[in-house]
Picture 1 (cartoon, rainbow, N blue to C red):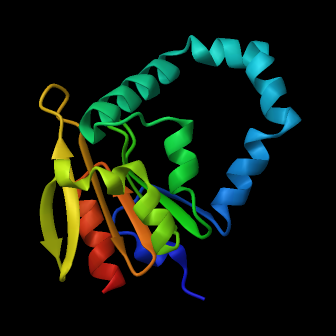
Picture 2 (picture 1 turned 90 degrees about the vertical axis):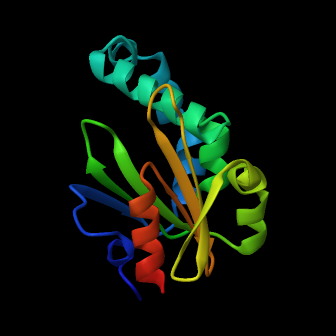
Picture 3 (picture 1 turned 180 degrees about the horizontal axis):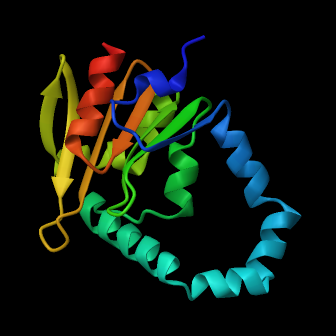
Length: 166
């Protein structure tokens, strides 16, 4: 079986793989551990931290670039079986995410349904979609190929995954 990290373009500082991300996310969201974490002093402290503020800002900027809420609902819709996240610039929170979904699941994602609002590009014969928010300069880019949904914060990262899939 192919290593998922082989789909990532060169230069990832950190990569995380899951063989069934959808199930892991479902288990976490319905767990007692999550409820305990959200009620904990540690979570309250984290919610007031500089890191949490930076992550929230990046999420808001990506929401503006994508044109839709980048929240738990979107995460559940893009969480497939085999999945991999590559972080490229931790300070700027630049990443590419690749997840195996069936075509119906891909077409049901809010991103796919809004693709006509993005600029279309082509890489190795595959269309991908890009939008950059003028206010924040944050980019949202995505593609689908051969049952893989690709989502990133840089168009070169999405194009790089398409190159590797080809």
